Image (tube, rainbow, N blue to C red; front, side):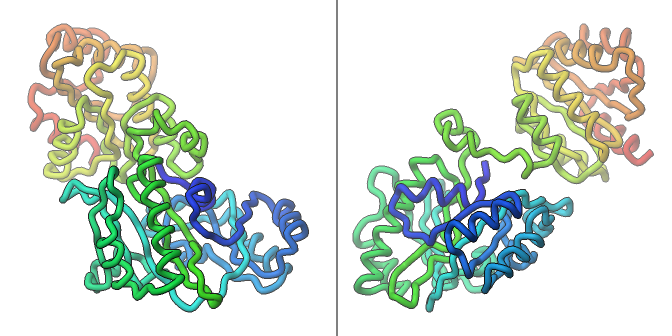
Length: 387
């Protein structure tokens, strides 16, 4: 789950992370009140969307007067940010963050993430703060220093000494940096994060460290023990289909193809998308209804696929182990009964009660194209999607 910058700052304040004051507004009326109440004469104004690269996309404005703050707010409220991270559909900024300007001499990057290849948590630091760390890693990897982290031990003294040496921290800055990194580590594990970064962490002209921008991503699988984080969920920052999927408790990822996929099991779902690509098509989604989905849940998933205007054909690929194939067939019967669905539907099933399932489809869903093989079903649905 992604969080907005202001939400990340709210959560990290209690871990002693120094940061400039910040205020959030969703209307010009609120902006004007903030200017008056906080005597804010200069500010940075930033869109709040679940994406990086906001500055390059025009979503960050520097305002030198109260009037410029209002003008910036007019441009940024309701602005659609479109870049590589948002995808072509973009994300709309319903909120903006206002913060007093900070004068600084140096910018650093400090982040914690999960290294999937090494199966460990890693601390990353760089002197190239304020830039996209992915580009730094790709172009000049020597500008990034990495240290492994462990929940029980945190960052050892010798590890921090290597970090401080790499960043050139000494004296007061070194002491402040140690407290900031310790706070980040504690926050990372407290909130079950997958990514927590300060970019940039700046050294002010007064000789202190302060966090100007933050990003926090939380593991979806740990949200059951993060009620405070769940309350921060912003449904406006995902596609309508993904919002519906969350409502139905379905494992769903919206893609940009034309073939809707309903599969049980993540591995089979990935194989299904691979075969669709191999046959010349493009999947419109990843949808895993799970091994023991109920008829109601399958109905919800199928309605979700039908609601997507980009879907030109649907492939249902089920291997019934725990899943009962008849449950899938009955769900299709329920959804298609009396409905004039113009989208071609291809179905391939194997496993538990498959003969009963095929009979239900034959008797009540004659427009569903039933295929006996995985390969044949993928080839057929690609042809259907192409007309």
